[in-house]
Length: 446
Image 1: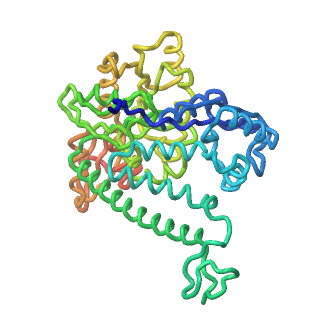
Image 2: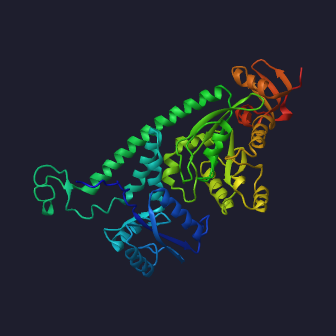
Image 3: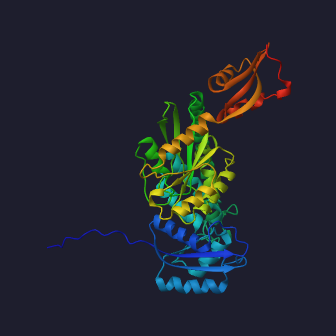
């Protein structure tokens, strides 16, 4: 008679975390908080954190990143807690990776923050587009690091007849090529294919945006540090059920929903991927098509977790990423989220003084949402710029937009075009810039 057995979960891999702070430190978060964030990332990836170590030093060691003595100390700690892997809080160079793998041995995997984030993105990508973006970022990260499996010329391929990998290449018609070279060539080919596929995605998104622009529906992009509550806010203001979890990078693929404002006008709200300090450059490049939703938006709503002690630093990390995307000049409203869980009203007052156009809200309970929607409507539909333009008649749609959405103060019809002076919504002002004229050159009204 056999006993009933209860299936058990596969044991988690055991991770030991390592961080460093340098004298010329330009990290946004202090070392201790950065390590806490790394631990959250490890937990999101399904790892069991069994220890951590940090070091403050002047510069990274050219060979082992940390000082040689510290590396040996960490090696003993890793052996003591029986860790399967060590994860560094910074991106390691290929040389650092090679040297550290030698130190820790083949039974301990050496990873860095970038590899960990890429792994989390791979876990959470649900759509074909998300999968393509993550795969591209992973390959571009791995390409210069293809060294561990092939460290000599013993394995060879190609070269034609005779024994592949013979001593000194005997019997090969050509010099042959190492397996490492084959792998690199194959990965380079795959990278090229992925870039082509993502260009098709980018073109499709561009056509989709053009159709939206023809409908004249303003687009709002929710941006913010990962886990700030963007998806919860989207659900609250659109009455939808986008996936929400108390995890870093719980959602990657952008989700767009239509919202009717109080006056009946419609807007589109897009939830975008969360940012984080030290966001891998490979991800920013690979997610270009997705992140263009931010650069093309009429308004950004920057969601800030007001309960987090590093809310100001998180906001700075978001601002730096927006600057990298050249979206830092976009109109923006700050939504100070999670006020229902805020223990210190004084801290909220500090944040309100810190940000321009900040609105305290709770995406969970709905507190402050009416005020946020009023601020959005004011930014999209009420803020206007004074302009003077001469528009050729062949741009009839643009002329119509001025009449439909602007306030006409002067108009003069001429043979080839029309002179218009007045105010247009901020979100439309850039469309009229190619036709701007100096106010002094404006002809007298008939």
